[in-house]
Image 1 (cartoon, rainbow, N blue to C red):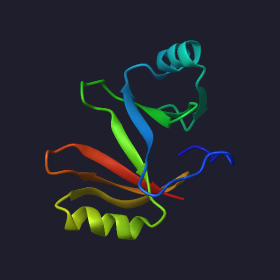
Image 2: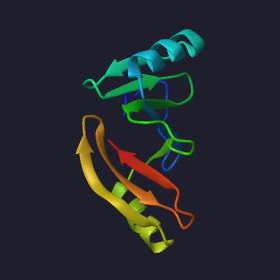
Image 3: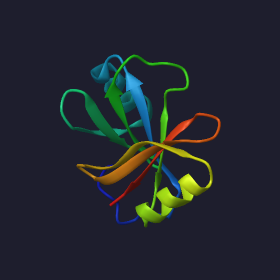
Length: 120
């Protein structure tokens, strides 16, 4: 995720990050910069992260599909959160992995919606 703003308090298991698929990341960056003033950080040609006033997120290369936005929650204890997701009936679809901002995992809920959980 993006660098933590010292004024922003991370809350355990809060919705904090949203990922979009974009067919043209440059166009998406221009649109959201002009529309909402989002600031972007590029992580290669296929991913850019944004910082907004109340939520952060990113755009990854891909064909946009309705329902393809990824909700990412923050966890102060990713292993415990993963165990609770499994215990509640969630299915892990991407086990815990490292990325430039920390680590995360993806899961589907009982309705098939995919979400992710990240930790520093």
